[in-house]
Image 1 (cartoon, one colour):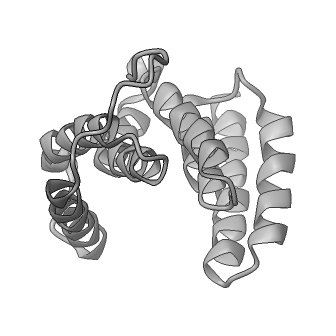
Image 2 (image 1 turned 180 degrees about the vertical axis):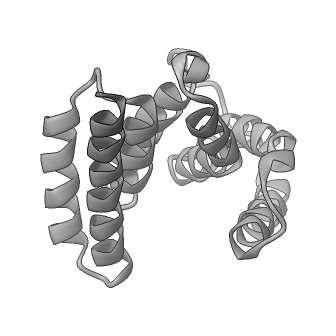
Length: 166
């Protein structure tokens, strides 16, 4: 029974990976369609690792910065459910935190909400210890540094009276 569940989980991650390849190959529309189909299948109660990974990449297919933010917030929310996960899934989600917060910082920056962007950038910087010393980790750390430089040049955003950020 447990082996069958692991195989099903591996199949979901494989399908996510296939859609990611389409995205990175430049076919955003096809990737978005596949991500939406997968989201419909796994639903709001699917495995947190699947929902986090899927939403994380789905955000990259969005044309509207507000939609991108919504998907990145879904990814972070799923990652925060890791308490009931197997050790390996928990570690995988922990390694995503720098990227999740970096993406949220970039989303808020696009929306002109530099205070929220700075907040998530600080959280990204605080989570870099979970990254390994490889191309992925180096890339995320470099992207954090670039966004830090850009935000340091921007004035703080004015309060919009909207709900507080996470």
